[in-house]
Length: 152
Image (cartoon, rainbow, N blue to C red; front, side, top):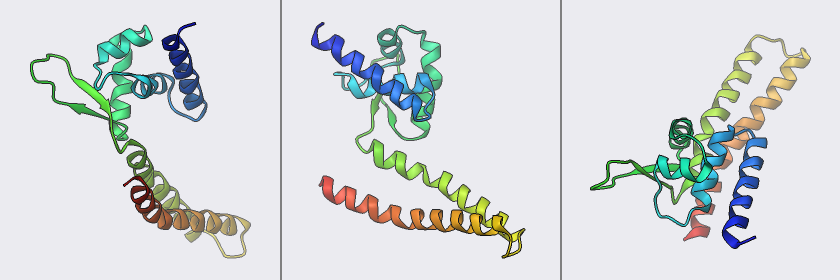
């Protein structure tokens, strides 16, 4: 087995792990292409060729990865195809976009707390949930600052 074949097997294993972690299968496979490619930018056609799938099946995955900030669309003068690349700050950006999910969880817990009496066991559980998400949201800015300082 050559090095390139081993790399793409590792990419597929990574995609499987990402899928197990909750990412949609095609989005995980497309993300693996971005992580393992030697090219600076790729097109949907490049991705489809690499994965052996239709360009249409790649489209939704690319939109998903764009929406969470892992990849970005780049201008490609002279090309009729759109070019994409992994963002340099992909992981902190992804982590930052997850704040909306944590904020939703926090608000859901707060909303539930207001409907319960303090002696209700559900009240205690929802307070724990709220407190956890308040703590996490308070820690994220410092974590990201420390990460950026470490990187520079």
